[in-house]
Image (cartoon, rainbow, N blue to C red; front, side, top):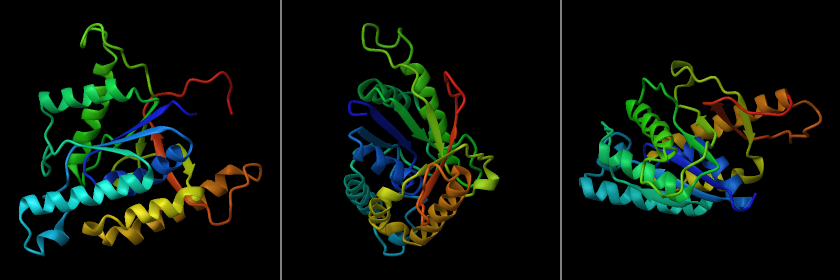
Length: 242
């Protein structure tokens, strides 16, 4: 509903597009205040195309920043970039404090971030640790006493690149069909990683087929459903089973 906020904590600038672009566009279209926090640009480990062009470190960062700005705008989100460095992304006291303050400023109703395990990219594990630790600290009344305290927003983990090696067990399949064109446009903004455009289109098709199969006839999902997979980190609190 309008007035609610979604916070996406992304290790690198491309991650939020591939893994949660549909959710971002969907909630933005519903009037939510959507914020994307990129801890790093992925300038070292996820910008091979630019390095082959003999660009400098600052030029690579600038290119990735431009991509992220345009992609976030396409999806309808406010972008925050911390430029904390990647490969490796390291958790520091200062970085964690900045994330906590972002929680306190945005006051998200829902949080999306990486899985706890991702042996193919340890930066993603670090982002998960920072995002979840930051959420807990932002709930503490003794942190910046007198300031508004974060509630208990549910945390959803988006799908890693190597699903089967990361212990990812999706329990939510989100129908993003109505905003797929916006996600696809945002993916094509990430020119430094063009090899992933088709890959994540295929992922959305596959998860869409699973969504249709598991939804039954009552939900009425279209034949060409596109979907994103998520895993809840904390239990869902409900008054009834549905």
